Image 1 (cartoon, rainbow, N blue to C red):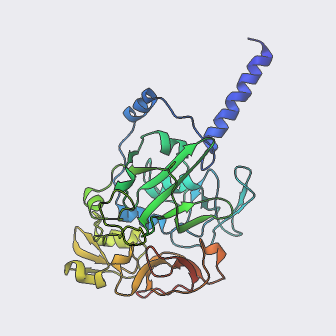
Image 2 (image 1 turned 45 degrees about the vertical axis):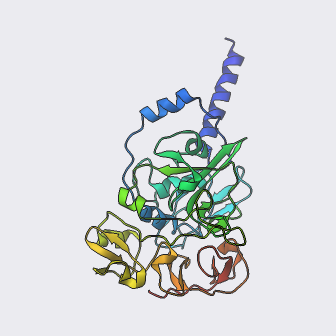
Image 3 (image 1 turned 180 degrees about the vertical axis):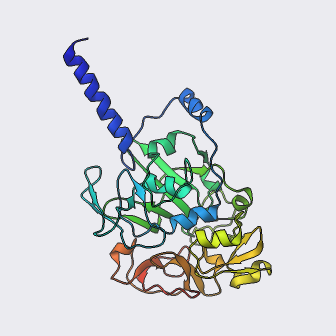
Length: 352
């Protein structure tokens, strides 16, 4: 082989390696053969156990952070250093907020951290183990499921034609849109919003979910649900069951960032209907929530800029898709809870 040809091969190999390392929400991976998928499955190490409540707790702390292509890191307790993305990815640039560490995430870096795969770790430590090609075509710490089987904490991913994206699913709206957490691009950043999901997206589920938690969290269904549509064609959502966690109440309280804690023995009536069942408590009460059903009458579970908490329904303000569109001091949140339009409003947690 000539020296010029060897040099060309080396340059091509280096470029291909760089693309694979950088793949996040835009780079693609060719669909592997069935043989390749089988080899991947056989070499997978066990997936660390986790609950849906833990996944959603981590996800709820990412809105407000910047899009950082090829990375995944944020502070779950503060939005003081959100970082800044400039340009259009994959030719975008990223910088840290002055005086702080560099934080931000792209779509696949965010989901890998929220799912805590391949291993558990502090999400403030930057890591980006998988791209959308991995989530779409491989079965490493996850598996494909039907859309009708989606539950809070599952994901929706596509990777085709040189592009890809992944979102973390929370629930369906009555109009059939998905409420998701996602890091959507340089301009949008990391957000919590309702959006349409195209046919190219497939549903995937993390392995190693705690069995009780998996059975005790219901997102409703947008298709194949067997529910009778309303006059406008939407499908009514069943009331979610109280979430279940295998973590002790104190550990759950710490991981969710709650400001208060009490252990009730009053079943689903404790905490005004809000709380999570744990091994040592019938209901572990705290000052944050995961879904509307955990809040009192006339209340909804909404993002306050740092965490999700119970807030009064009936918010008013300009329509929005993410908080970057809102005036200072306001947050993009549902007007009247799950399934309602998003508006800019001042957050007011009722149980802090």
